[in-house]
Length: 305
Image (cartoon, rainbow, N blue to C red):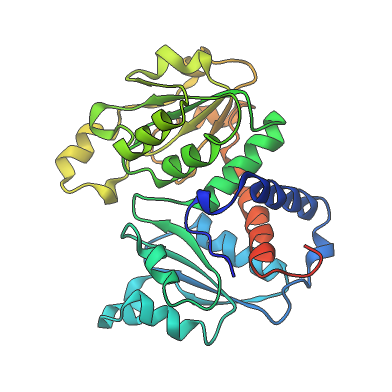
């Protein structure tokens, strides 16, 4: 039995297999419509979510399975003080696989300690978000035709951005990857991520202005400044508008650069940018369903997948 807590839980070969299966599902979804018949996915979301929760639920339904769970800690026994481990030990009596989102770092790992069914980390605080990373990789590969030899720019909240941490951890394993890290000093990438890059001799540069580096990027990954991770509102208000992608900045970018964003967007990408063919974040959201379908099939070891 395999869990997915962070991208390093999957080898590059396993990631490739999931992305290949996702491509097959995109091409012929009817062939997979009954693959999870009589299987149940439990979505345990202790934190708000739109795309991740709905894409997981849509994925299981389109595979012919069913969904149970909750969309807020207040509607679960966590409100009564139940631990994550006890919740998992109970839920595994009713479900075949679990997707869990929690505001505390490491919570998904704790959930695996007594688990007898696969656990998928759907985001744990400011730590990791591996299924968003699978979505990002599928989007990059489908649009750029490769996962190697490119410069990836990450812009915005790189301190608390779990999607950023997971994407760096995943893509650093591919040949010829370079990172441009665009953030204010207060929101720079955590030291443990930089230490990983240094340990593996992955080239990176920290910059403070998007205009300086956007012309070098093959992929620009924008992120919002996350209000829910701040200890006080003053710091959030001071930093929330640090980087706004607009048409003037897009004019400085390469014609074949793509813009991704894990969403939700607040104001860090102007709406006018949506009409630029390089703006791919809504396609990225759509592909999230298919990659989660593929992941569920792989973790449940469904025959023929």
